[in-house]
Each structure stands twice: as structure tokens, then as C-alpha cells.
Image 1 (cartoon, rainbow, N blue to C red):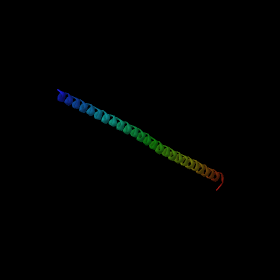
Image 2 (spheres, rainbow, N blue to C red):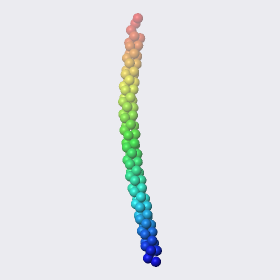
Image 3 (cartoon, rainbow, N blue to C red):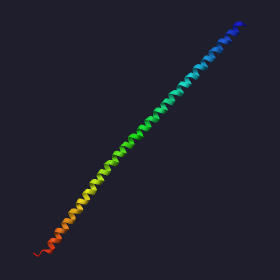
Image 4 (cartoon, rainbow, N blue to C red):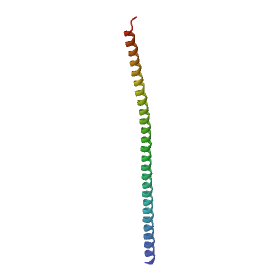
Length: 95
């Protein structure tokens, strides 16, 4: 009977050890998954920051283009007024 008890004890110890190993592996996998998820969130945040920087740059460039276009429009308007003055002055002069 004592050999049967020893075998049962050894089997029980092996089962307990197998359960401990399995639970420690599961815990390690959970930790690794958590690290991966945190890293993915950091990467996602960096991606959004990068996109925001790109959009700010695009907006700054668009503002600069708008200013330039506005200045060119004002210059064209001034040229048109000058031409009209020239034409008005020529119409008043007798030929």
C-alpha cells in the first residue's frame, strides 16, 4: 500500500507542478499582451501626432499661399485701377 501512496503523491505533485507551470505561462502571456497593447497605443498616439504635425504644416502652407494670392489680387486690382486712370486721362486729353 505504501508504494501506491507514494505513486499517488508523486502524480499529485506532478499535476500541481504542471498547473503552476501552465498558470505562470498564462500570466507571462497576459503580461506580454499587455505590453504589446500599451506599445500599440503609444504607436497610435505617435501616428496621430505625426498626422497632426503634417496637417499643421499643410495649413501653414495653405495660409502662406492664400496670403500670396491675396497680395497678387490686390496688385492686379491696383494695376487695373492704374490702367483705368491712364485710359481716363487719355479720354480727357484732346488728340
